Image 1 (cartoon, rainbow, N blue to C red):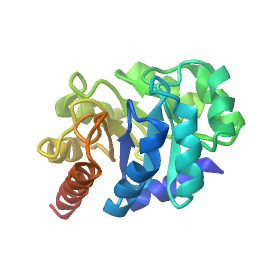
Image 2: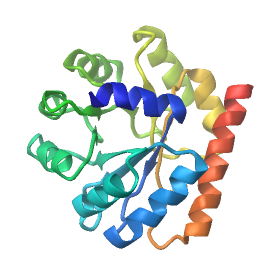
Image 3: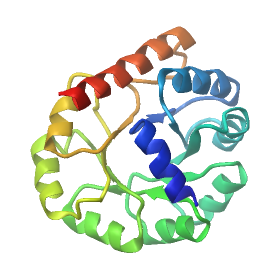
Length: 211
């Protein structure tokens, strides 16, 4: 269910907002600003303050968007995320147990990979897409090389060091979308500034598409 929902949300805007460090009190207004800018997929890493409460608040207030958890390291955490209203599981690494726990619960899953070996293993396990991480290491030439050997329908999302200035190079190399962290959200950022940053990323993506 959530895999098809992820594809729909991803088709509307293939950018994942990573809200590391957000608090439950900030979650709803931050999500509103991101959704107004065009984002449809929001991730609250589990090493944020009270992440499940933030996920619950976003899911309840903004059902038109897909919200989930990042930094999910154990299969036992998947149920907690779903119970909070999350539909997406994101990890910095590939754990077959986490992917399978996500699929068993009908949730989309983006495990972290950095090599073709990890990428094929994650796809074989049923991953919805691949988080290419860290982006500083998985540069556009590396993305191009990985893209050349993977199935054409495999979704590749570089994460780490993504900015409005390097998105075009990654897109040209074969990236399908991006996860955007500290260049978009940092703890304490004002809603106006978050909205400005969000619009900048959406505009940069649209410009890349037009190019």
